[in-house]
Length: 141
Image 1 (cartoon, one colour):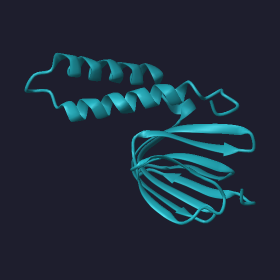
Image 2 (cartoon, one colour):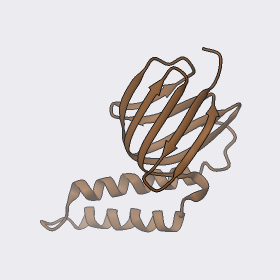
Image 3 (cartoon, helix red, strand yellow):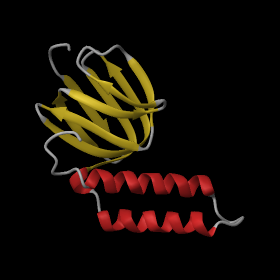
Image 4 (cartoon, helix red, strand yellow):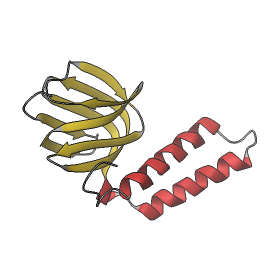
């Protein structure tokens, strides 16, 4: 494992969400989740809907992220996301309602249902609920 830390920046069109020195990351990329440690090879990836996790010392922090891009340099990671919410910022009741609406649309079916859109809404709601439950966990499960 390389020495040092990673300068992590996560921004959305509305705000800067994170700018911290971290020790490790887990990011939902175009081909699945990937990890980043200090000294990582340069990489550019699409950001998919998923859980962004980063470790500072022994504590993990989590965000629900969706759509955008990730740029990895040796000791710097920049995430440009359409949406990103820290675990404690997530409105669980709202996410639960969104999950239920998406499930109802999928179950109802029919020509007027956009299945792809409903599946994406369901995935995003499930990720938001999962991330919100991790706000008090000291280590990664």
